Image (cartoon, rainbow over the protein chains, first blue to last red):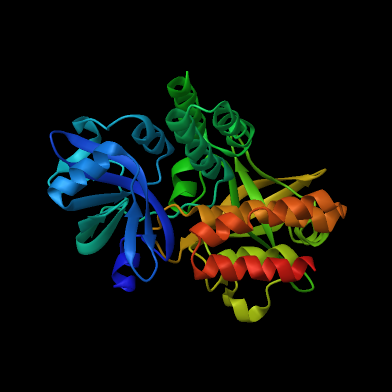
Length: 181
Length: 181
């Protein structure tokens, strides 16, 4: 099972991916898929949890586009972002996975059903990209808890994004700032 | 040129990779290859700079193995880590590139000569891995400047590595701790 998940980009630890659940609409949100002895995800976000409970399904897309991470943190990605809707695959996806999901409290235990590779590419470590991810962790906490300290922490990553990132990272950070206003 | 560099994993921004220079021995060190209007790298580390000046060459390996990043931050990787020595390719390399390098002060301007893809794999974002990179930035500053604040900052990433990382990330962090002692 580990080898199979690795083929699609998920490894031991917490995998930051885009979670997709289907209900009255297509719900998208960044989630952390934990791969340890079990595979599970902790859910706070209401629609992801609600749709997952009803459908018993969680789709996951592995992406490395910082703009997709930002957009998905604050709103649902509309159909135009998708290359396929069944299974749901984003245009920028590297791979997709389908899981059967069983909710117990705030944890959804996942069982792998199927997956597919969209594209494999080599990408050197970029601290500017990584800084976007950390900024988003704080930005979404700010939106949820409305505490200024999280906003301040999110903004602290701007310097690293501008120094180390590429055009996409700078654009993603600007977009995040607009959502925070 | 941009498209060609992308094929080997280097994109606009600062690419954190393993730099390899050949002299009396094989010198390895993490370096940040800047891809903007020009391609260049800022050099502080003595042997990289010295070997590059003599040879006029910089080899680059794109890797995503946290243990390689840690080892290369504190010592030269011995021959057993290499799959090939001419051109130098690490066993864990995703790709390699050869540049002609022209040193001007502390900056080496790079001109792409050739490169190769070793393996393409999909990897979801892992904040534990990213935390290792940030810890190493501080750890190497600590070794260079001998200021306790850098060591303290490096250690602050332990929590994130343990929470989000896999076995490799935890092992890499432990290794870094041993080098810092």
